[in-house]
Image (cartoon, rainbow, N blue to C red; front, side):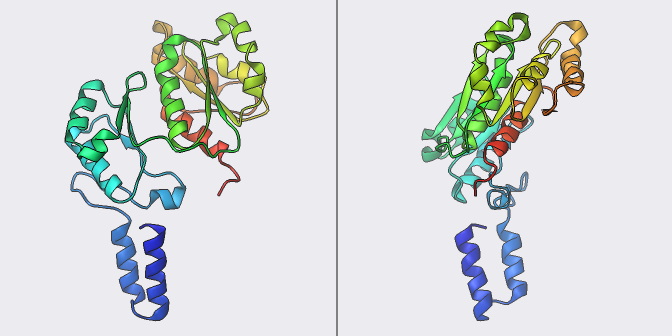
Amino acid sequence: MEDRALRALLEDVARGTVSTEDARAQIARGSFEDLGYAKPDLDRGRRQGVSEVIYGAGKTAEQIAGIVASLRRNGEEHVLITRLDARKADEVHGMLASEDAADFTYHELPQAGVVGTAPQPDGVGYIAIAAAGTSDLYCAEEAALTAEMLGSRVIRLYDVGVAGIHRLLAHVDEVRGASAVVAVAGMEGALASVVGGLVPCPVIACPTSVGYGASFGGIAALLAMLNSCASGVSVVNIDNGFGAGYQAALIDHVGRS
């Protein structure tokens, strides 16, 4: 339920024109919309400061378009759809209402769709996304796009892995000045520990599934990051650029109402 509608309802309760039980029922109904196949959470933005994000994998184009329509008609200006392949993105685009379709943008590298535009940055600083190699950019871009959609300014530092550590050190002032750093790496995942030893801010380590056989699809990088000797390093799941970008944006907004 939007803040304006909630305020009006509470004023009706205070005047005695609406009972507390009726108000409770209205609030319960207004917190989500039942589409049958999904119940979009319409109250999440008020509760958490960030509205619902659509996970595209496993959903049909019709379901995604229906959820987008629900969020948009209930006042959501920015909708992010993650794990959306190009074929399905074309189908979703064709199913959206004309206004929403005009606002739809597909980002091929992170496989994400956006309805609306990213809000103006309103964090306390900026987020640095450091990716070890070019092969990690699919995950790094998911983190960057997520953070931007949540109102953070993002700087991208790409191909700065430990195989040529001078490339990272050339950007040391930028990583040290960030509100948070997302360190994205596959292979042995060493980038997170190196960054953690350089900066005074939280580091969010994001392992990728990039690597040869003994990397076990990102498990080697995940374990290395979990066992980091650098303080202040936290770890998200393998290939979870969304989770890393989301967490970084929350850190970037600490102290902001």
